[in-house]
Image (cartoon, rainbow, N blue to C red; front, side, top):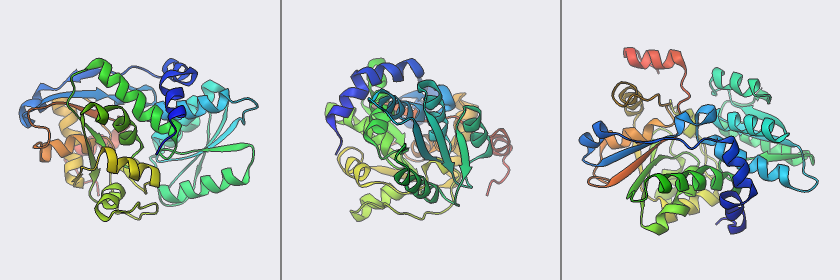
Length: 327
């Protein structure tokens, strides 16, 4: 399923040291208001306060750091991103002396594109969907022997960096955690967390937008949707297909994935801002939305909700807070 040597390298070797120097240990804070509503002891892991505004920096830094440490390493990377992975790749590449190109789809928010470019990466808009941008990025990397493709989720270094290191922080901050709730797109974050926590008896629950839920559909039908055309969703960072690797991890570690509506995602962003006092982007909101819809799976349990990112456009947040329609 994953390379144990890579896991050790990312979570305990020189790669881990480099990642930790580039990233922050993000706060884990109690959320008593949400706890009273759900009947659980709720804590929020605030990856929205990570450098670049999301957890994605962890995995990108792990992959680029490992590449930079290789003897005779190639010094060019190509990535596809809905936004946050590209920000992580751009920052890590700048830190470790690697040239980066990030392909984004037309759906990627303009402010994220600008942020990627400001960090020194070349940004190109390719295709209408994330999957189209990824296909082009993979083709370019395969055709260029000086370049390496850095996947947003289907890579052992990325999975260990995003999920493994995040899980270890949670366990250090709250050793008696009983459940963890995480948004699911391609499944790399949840898979990495699962490797660390499920063998310890900790329950891992996923949440996805019902209009774009490749992993839930894969689990329901017993096959990995490595190509997937979902519907439009505000949570653009969760769009797209899964991989055989992350599908296998989902079956082992997080077979329960709640589906939430677009209205629930919008309401969760507003709830997070007004009630919890945090800025939560749409791709992070399903984890909160799922508990607002139905918290029976974690009732009475000490539960961490991963707030995976906070990169939301100011105009969009204003629209949501004012009650204006988004779609």
